[in-house]
Length: 234
Image (cartoon, rainbow, N blue to C red; front, side):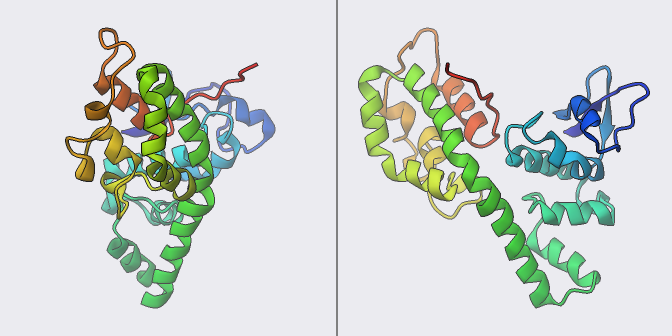
């Protein structure tokens, strides 16, 4: 996984002006023809200009940071990129690695621990939680469109606590760094919901043209990967 941007002849990508916003086509994966790889410092430099333009919510930027670190490893990052990883609270870096780096930068162990708590709070609560209700709204559309109509009310009523934990506290599930079961455990039939999740309790509206694997994948893309496209219902 790598970060890339569109190649624009005669344009300088580090010019942070309104005129430069149009071309910030950032993606992750293998760079296609006409695109070139970029690093974390570039992404961090221009993220405030592409939010709402290329990316749907701030969490997508963090996903790119995690993907870049996964590809290059902590030891492969320069100091500037390590600071970016800390500022974005990357899940690809352990707290021990972060603390060791911060102490080498002059922080005491206590100061380093406090800073990491602040970064977690800023990324997980201040920025991530507000995006959960809108993600859930788009995920709910997938459920309503693809689960049998007779099951929709039951789905919402029986999973009210899981849904509330997600929309109010960003609890996704045990497989996603949380300490309790979440909505994704039910969706994917994992942990406490193994053998008793969504696919085992409900029926697809179109069992011949759709599949649970497809629905689960699409819902995961929305809730976990923030891959959805807002639309105007008018």
